[in-house]
Length: 127
Image (cartoon, rainbow, N blue to C red; front, side, top):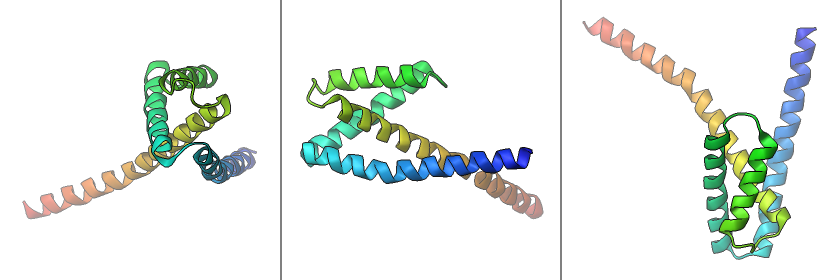
């Protein structure tokens, strides 16, 4: 039963990740049509900083509170130049990128441990 549960959860995770991976470029393209590239790059960077700051303040969980705080702060920093939908899309894109970076960092940890083991064995063999 646990195996079936794990398979279902993994399948749902892959479906959600694929959906986000498909939607993020569409959202960025949509926002790009509303603003020029220079401003979009600035807004994306601001959204990424805000998402990281909100994550530091609120910690794990509290997804809706964090998103609300991030949208409010992004609206203030962009001086209301973006619609509510655009704000939400930018925050979602920033969260997606942050999570993707985190997953890559976590995957790199076992590789780092393996390389440290190899280096330690080489050093022990030299001595």
